Length: 501
Image (cartoon, rainbow, N blue to C red):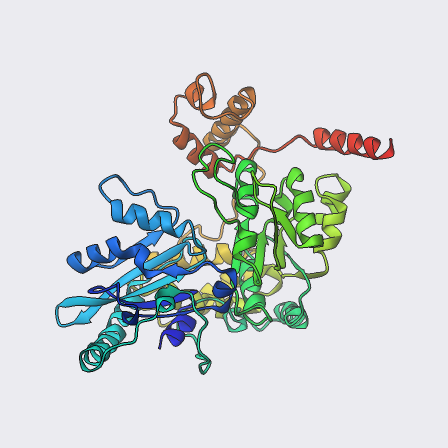
C-alpha cells in the first residue's frame, strides 16, 4: 500500500507511523525510492516525535518545508524544519488518522523537490485510506506482538517489488499532457521520442510560453531515469550571488546566512534529470563550473574543497539564440557544444493554429471549476478570432486570455473580454511609462551603489525602502545585475592573452 501511494502521488518517501508509541519499531512502516537508500540519508521517525505529539493533540494536518523559519513559539516545527535541512527531503506532510476520534496513526509523506503542493482532495483521500489501514493495524497489534528491529524505524529502506500503478495524481509528466495534433507539434514530439531513451543531453529551443518545461517533464517521465527525481532550476530567476549555491550547494559558514550545510540541485538530481531553464542567462563566471560537471561529473559545494561525484542527465531550455550568444562572447563555446547534443525546436503557437480549439477546451476544463463556471460551447467566431491572432506570448498568453474570458462569461457559451486580443505595444520607448521610469531609477541607484542593497548609504536606504521590499520590486520589474558586454569581452581577451603567454 505504501509503495502504491508513493508511486501514485509521485513522492519520494512514504511512512505510516504510530502517534501513540513511536518507540516501538513495529509501529512504523515505510517505503522509499531506491535513490534515497543509495544516498545513505535516512529519514527517521523519532526526529519528528515532538511534532507527532502536537499533531495528536491538535488533530490537524501539518506541512513542513525546509525553507520555513518558524517563530520562537513553535519549537517542534522549528526542530522539524532543521531536521529536513539535514536530509534530502525538502517538503513533508503529516496527516493524522486513527480509529474513532483519537488519531493514533499518521501518514508522513516526503518529497525532495522544493515547494511541493499537498492538495486538499489528496489529503482527504489519504485520510480515508488511513482509517482502513489503521483499523487493521490496530487489530493486528492487539492480537499478536510485533517483532522489534532497530532498522525498521529508518526511512528510507529498500522498497519491496510491487505491481506498477498508473498514477491518478495530476503530475503533468507524460506525452498525453502535450495537447495538439498539428504537423509542427508532431515534428517536435517525434524528435523528443527519438532521444527519450538515451542518456544524451537535450536543449529545448523555443519562444517564451511554448511549453518547454512540459516537454522536459515528458522526456524525464518516459526516459531511463524516471525512477529518480526531476529537479528544475530557472537560471534567469536567481540572482548571480545565489545561483552557484542553488546549483552546487554550500557548507555551513560559506557566506553570511549559511547557518547549515545545504545540498544543491545537482545533488538532489543524482541519478535523475536536471532541468536548466533559461540556460542562456547563466552568468559567465558559473559557466566553467557547469562545464566541469558535464565533463567530469564532479563539483564542490560553495565553501568546500571536497569533491562530490554526481550522475545527472541535463535538459536545458532557452528562448535565446545560443549560437549568436557564443559569437558575441556572452556564452562559452565549449559549454554550448557540450549542451547542444540533441536540440529540439518547439513551435510557437502561431505555427500550430489548428491546435488552438483543443488547447482552449483543455484550459476551460482546467479552470472553470475553480472559477465556478460551466461552459458547454465555444462559438465559432470566438475560435476564429483566437486562431487569427498572432500570439506573441504563445500558450501562456492563450491561458490568460481564456481565463479572462471565463471570468467575463456569465452563461454557458464562452465570451471573449473586449480588448483581450490586442497585442501590447512592446516598442514603447524607455521612460514613457511609470514602470519603465521606476526601473530606470532603481537600476541607476543600484549601479551607483555597486549593486549593494543592505547597509548605510546603499541602495535600499537611498531609495527609502526596506531591503526586502527593494528585492521584491527588482524581481517584479525584472531587474537583474548583468556585466557589460565590453567587460566580458575584455575578460575573454585577458584570459586568451594569459593562455598565450
